[in-house]
Length: 154
Length: 154
DNA sequence: GATTATTATATCGCATACGATATATTTTGT
DNA sequence: ACAAAATATATCGTATGCGATATAATAATC
Image (cartoon, rainbow over all chains, first blue to last red; front, side, top):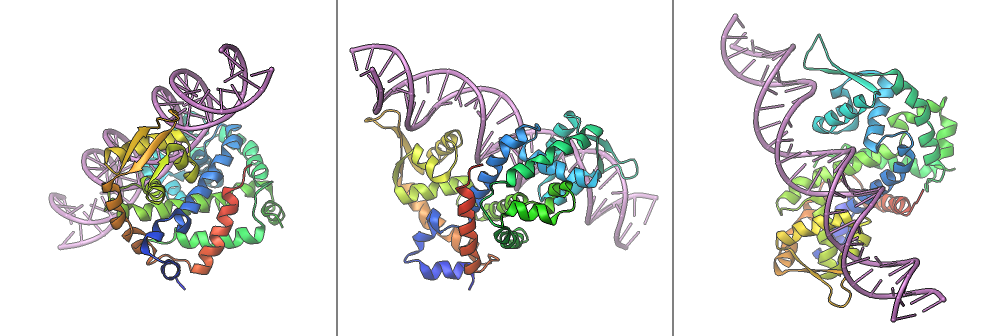
């Protein structure tokens, strides 16, 4: 049964749809806030914010890529990514230059300092996962559902 | 088996921990972004942002409450809520006044206009849920896991 | 090959979220 | 009662995220 139908049949009146406890969006929103908040002290050790951290994940993986690649990988908008990579450049973790072939493209490349940070960054997911409150089976099921949501367009 | 152990045993080298695809935080973050982004056009019709919408949910439920009650209900900080309620007051949806008994408290009360907005707001979750990509069973399981995460402190 | 469409990015403005710090008020402890 | 602790909020600064709009460069089309 579809989620929405279930909700409709379980409630006495339509106003109950507006209770926080009957929402899915709110636990999603809160759980993500919790996750990011719990990352903060660990990421502070390597002087990264959460968003900078996931940008660096893409950079660590690809080493050389376009701004557009980051936008696509993270499902964010270019006006979110643009100031972010400027900060990462200022920190010396990446270089930014214009593509000489197609001058619309911005080429991002990891620096030596960026590579070195990876060594310390590896400790973050290790420490982070140590007391995570879900089993691996739960995480697998959770990720599957989250992927369905990410691919959903209203 | 704990999530972290599973991840550790499945990977060949520790650097794979830094791949986006091996993260849980990232699908959580993306799915929440998707959910909020999908709400935006619906909420625009009633001139609310997502955060204003969940604040109003608390107000619609309690009608009269303290700023602190909203902070507790939404797991946000008071410096996030304070400017939010000022905007909602400016829109005429709530009133804000100081508690005469305990002058530290800020009392928030719904207005007639705020009550009226509820009538139109009810349509939002109805429309929103129509094409939601998860079954009611999945949503139940999902919420249970999300609650564990929300209650997790590192 | 000039016009149009598409692509990639930049810029601006608005709305969160948080930590850090400060302030006002009430409560607690002695 | 009076100093110290706790509580509730305010203020400031930093860092996202997004829509809207603009611009520059390339691709497509006729």
